[in-house]
Length: 341
Ligand code: NAP
Ligand code: G4F
Image (cartoon, rainbow, N blue to C red; front, top):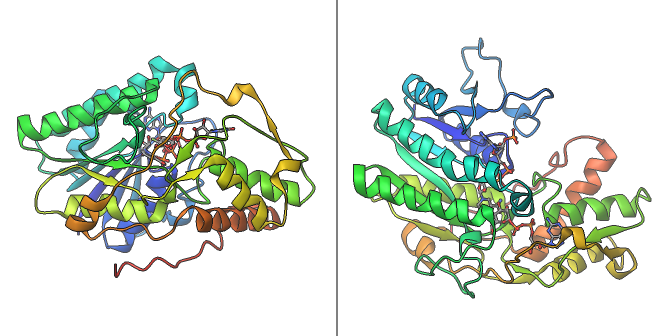
């Protein structure tokens, strides 16, 4: 049985990746942060009491700011695969908390890499790199595109990208960077723009809210569907050689277009409800991210299936359903990914 360690297991991607790996028969270990309230809602459905002999998901308290704890955990767990998904992942928040973002999103990665090295284990390492690293460099962006980060978050991810590459070259570690463009789902955090929109659509339709306050509607992103992207992460670690890969749909969509698709799906005209609020602007914006994932398609057989308009419909349906059930928004999430491509 293969053993994996996931940092950020309580996040959007961590929860889908844990599902994927458990489905493949892995023993999965997750790093979780101690918090005064429960923070495991995205993985509660996967949890089995560790006393149960069939339990294959194990959670460990820890933090990417605590290097000694990471060394202890790596030594004890001795995973075959490490997925570093933990981060302060919100770009706008990184302008408010630049030092904290640098400490977790940047330094957290080298602490984990160093823990792998000090523990002396033989494992493969995935680093959650980001299209945000391309920042001001115009699209289309691929693995050869120069980085020009436009936020403390983007700069911290560039640091993590390079130390991952450095540990590959310096120590022969099977370490890869997945340079992922925006990917969303009904489990997306409520303050990222897609989920903020689809949640508002459901609440406006139900008569619970009248307005949605937004920032820059002209920004262009390449939005894909998160469950497909965690499959790509796994494929990167199964390759014969370690390498860095872009994952993206290759299709552009502005925030305004996503708004239109989401509101139209609920039979609403967004212009009646959306208001501008400058607090959602960023000191420096990333205007346009559109990825070229042809290397991943050629080498890993990975290709995005769900594109932005369908993604908007999936997310609106899930948020409408969540209001009905007053529970988790992914109860009836469609299982329609076809991995034959
Ligand atoms: P997310 O939902 O915000 O999840 C972030 C995870 O990191 C959460 O589990 C969070 O724990 C954990 N975390 C935060 N600070 C930590 C710390 N100091 N120590 C340990 N864990 C910590 O993010 P996501 O969308 O799943 O993204 C996963 C990774 O991919 C992130 O590194 C993100 O930057 C990167 N990425 C995401 C996208 C995207 O479009 N989603 C694109 C490119 C790259 P709590 O639950 O306790 O907060
Ligand atoms: O949803 P967003 O906050 O995502 P952003 O900044 O693109 O970052 C996400 O994708 C990155 C990959 O490229 C990840 F690395 C990162 O961790 C995160 O997952 O904002 C998208 C766009 C921005 O241009 C923003 O200015 O939407 C614009 N926007 C307009 N109004 C808004 C809003 N963003 C948010 N969060 N809230 C608004 O009201």
